[in-house]
Amino acid sequence: MILTIARKEFRSLFATPSTWLILGALQFIFAWFFLARLDAFLQVQTQLAQLANAPGATQAVAAPLFGTIALIMMMLVPAFTMRLIAEERRNQTLTLLLTAPVSSMHIVLGKYLGLLLFLLLIIADCALLVLVLTAGTQLDTGLVLSNALGLLLLTASYAALGLYVSALTAQPVVAAIATLAALFGLWLVEVSAVDSDHAWRALAPTGHFQSFNSGLLNSADLVYFVLFSAAFLLLAIRRVHNNRIYG
Image 1 (cartoon, helix red, strand yellow):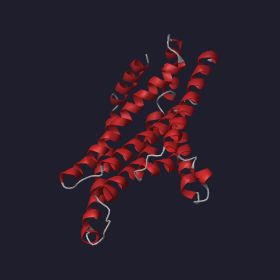
Image 2: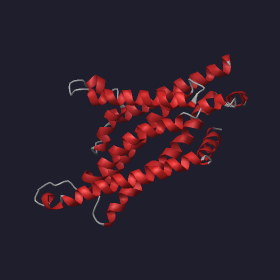
Image 3: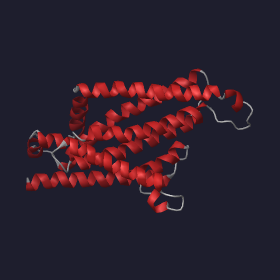
Image 4: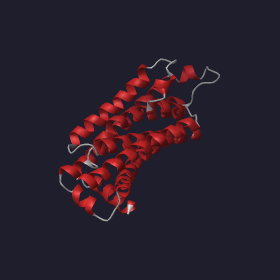
């Protein structure tokens, strides 16, 4: 049943014209940032050739591109999570879904998985763009995979938070604004925290993504993303379950 709901959610995303507009705009933005970083890297090739341990194309182009896309995803994910449950409630279709012989957990996980598959396509598109560099140079495959994994985990955590916020309201726009405000607040915590504020820095998903962006696979960061996503998914399941009981 989870896969059935996920397929329905995945197909519904491509059924709206706004999705194709967003995908087209993202492709342009990704290409623009990629070419800008590549041009800057090529302009300093002469200086880099004189350094003993000069950064390669992966460190100078791919890693910064993934870092930029991480910020873009923070603004993009709320636009998709806002409709997961809030729009169902506004259109009076959530009641039909809740009366169906399917558990609240299946509903939440199905919608979450469907959105995550869609967002995975965007991440894969970014990875393919980076792989274009193999036509002219060698890439640090480990660093590229680390960034792709980190971006996936970061996006999954954003989607889980957005899904929970979407379950709290019947207005998709309110859900999008609230999710963006929460993510932006977490990002500000990470940006404004000084090096000694390890506790505050540990609260922000973007802070844990930095390790992946540097090519470091830290088990603590993996656990953080899993717990962060699981916590908000459980809260969303609880919220949908309460809606089923109390109406």
